[in-house]
Image 1: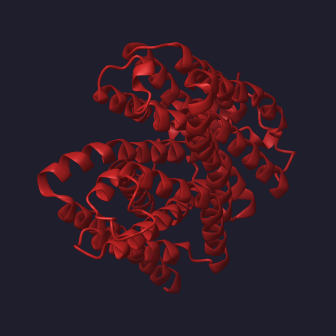
Image 2 (image 1 turned 180 degrees about the vertical axis):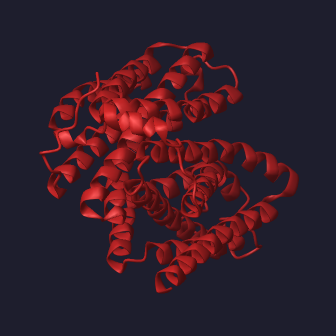
Length: 417
């Protein structure tokens, strides 16, 4: 049902920031089961009734491909219904899938469940983005707010992967998944603490005006934001995350005492765990400092340049210790550019008359990049090798920095004239 927004109740900063925190916590809880699968599915594939390694790969990636065509529909949903409604649907779907992971075996059943989870995550992702946009509209601190949301919600991935895998060894996969499903169930009462301004549905008059306008007005700033978001998700969420263990396997750690006796998979797990633990702090402070400097574009441009340099070094034949330190630096930079790119998108959406379409389109583009990353990464690595691919990754990030610098310079010249 369409609900008329009450215009006589002005939004205030504490209220929208409280909404943001609650939605971030709900997001984190809903991520428990999904994140756990990334850790346990490759190891306990037989317990899930899987017979081939390719089935693991399909199950861990199909949810991303499902989200690509779903995002526009979710964007349409949020123009007519509240964030609470979308999150309620998402939580129910999360409960169903998380419980079912532990009790249904076989590739076909799990494939359906992963598709359902993809739909649930689309609701959650856009609810989070809209809550950031709403908060930015009031407080004008996109960096801090995006860092806060990404930090809190990212804790769900840490809990799911680290604690989920540890508990599975002692109590069994089904028991832990059931526990995570219960957590999702008890997160429902949190919805009642989201204040009325967390509702994003539009009035009938606004919907009519929206239908009369173009669905999404494309300008140079939006194109750059979309290109940057696609590049970041392609390289960091897709390519780098999926091929990290492959890179590490190629290195000789025999001369590093602490790492000489452990395998590539363990080193990969340690590095990713360190990154996830640092994400809440690093993303929040990078976003907050970018707000204070009043020039997020400069921060983002410098971060893209630095990330490109790191990718270029990884493609060279350098000392193993230097290579490892460069990789760690790149993992940290990925946290910064993800936060700042999302913040840029949130700030743009907050000033757009079609904010719902900006959010849904940005979410879709990011998912396209994340889905293509693993596929293109392994395909191109087998053809061209890691040196050329990492050089191409560096060039892509430098191209992003060039676009940002050009647009920033053009904007300043326009303001002067």
